[in-house]
Image (cartoon, rainbow, N blue to C red; front, side, top):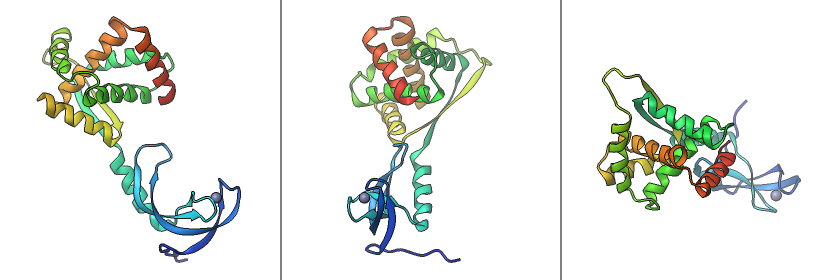
Length: 206
Ligand SMILES: [Zn+2]
């Protein structure tokens, strides 16, 4: 069996989930978002419904492009940190939502990183937070370390890179600082408005 190769403008037929019937389709190149919202594939050859213009199928030849884009879309943030940092992050996530999953831990980090990277919270705060964190969580040699590994979108890893650059801190120190801020906001002195916002985030991230 050979795989049929399609070109832009080729005609075919498919069931359109939107029109709920068999429709004529035309192949075209489109930027298509992943179903989980994590990134997009640019200029992907897809079958477009002739009646409602929605993407109804992807031909076999587009599969490598999708897989390639997926790999690029998910970049892990990784850091070797004293175990206490991960305990704090887990505890904060638990405090916000007793049913929270690791997906929420990631969303929480992403939210904080974005706030600082976008300037909504002042990035200078992070230098101070990092110093406080290093004082609060003594990092003796030989202390248990755990690896924090969060698979995040390109946008979040870009936020982290930019913050490290702008503050002159290492990426691990930015993560230390952010976790310390999360501790302050969620565990030490929780503000009702912020807690509500974070609870909502946990619903979306779950
Ligand atoms: Zn349609």
